[in-house]
Length: 459
Ligand SMILES: Nc1ncnc2c1ncn2[C@@H]1O[C@@H]2COP(=O)(O)O[C@H]2[C@H]1O
Image (tube, rainbow, N blue to C red; front, side, top):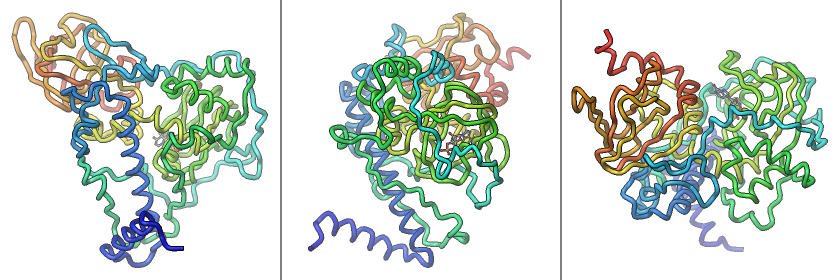
């Protein structure tokens, strides 16, 4: 049977790529990288397209997404800053009179989404033979040499051409290529719409109406789930598997392939990168998303530090449902947050957590965002546009532009707002609540303090 046009094109493209890079040695790794990169780009384009569709009400808006430059579809992402994602019942903040707000608050993650009496269980006890949660598993130090950093798809900076041509794979053979070969690439296509009719997750098990109500009550508050429409939420709930994990178990091992994403109903876990503790989390939190999002090896080892009840979502359901919705902000804000100087010292993981917590506000030229003397509730990054900072006694004291931040002084010093900030163009802001600011910007607080514009006045 002859190849179809599409198949022929596909093969030719790969052939050309091999010819132009002339890889020597580990061809399999080379091929893996090529297709992994393609998959990542497909995902990114998909997310942007979905974002476009969701935001088409303001296609003519003049606000620009930080990712706009990456699109030759100049009317697409650029023009999509709708004031709230109302149609999907995902709104957390409604449009305020000050500005318009959209997005979810990952802060709600810190609420206990599982606090209700939780006897809804699937009796999916962990299979000893193949489960990463095998309670008999002892914590081993990691044998496999492994890149400590989180592997992420390459993101060239921003134009459609770049996206299409962003496969820049070295033809050099990785020295320890066998040990480092990543095998977790997933062949699943990133087209949620195509499965909606017939696709059922592998571990799908209908919950009773009573179980459903209780599960929905408990996880509905988690930011991961409150962005889902009714059908997707039902699918996710029916796909969750309960995992009981004894204290001391290794739930995830750094370097392994990603199989499940976890939400903690009960108990505490610690995270280790290269055997060094990097954090911990407890009730209502979630983990294990990175390997599934980026098709990369597990970035950390996760150990239960008490008996835990976890809800696990399989990789495919995670990718098909949650990735397209709940983690969209991570993908959308990844490049932006990387390019904000104050955040450059943070790890990718910390920036991802910030992206989860961001909310978007839009203001028109002339609108006041914060007023001198008010109580400080939020911290802001300028995603697009300009603003001026004025003090009653001094007049204009600063001009702000894209990638600048403001609103930190009141939060770090526990003071009323020290100045008024006014939009001097249409303005798009990414904002963090005070609690998210305190929780997520801890590592950069010293730098914020050093840069505190009121510091010279105080000393
Ligand atoms: N500092 C950290 N670096 C990487 N992963 C972390 C960190 N802290 C917590 N984690 C979580 O540990 C998980 C290990 O599996 P994943 O790489 O899939 O996803 C990871 C994150 O959810």
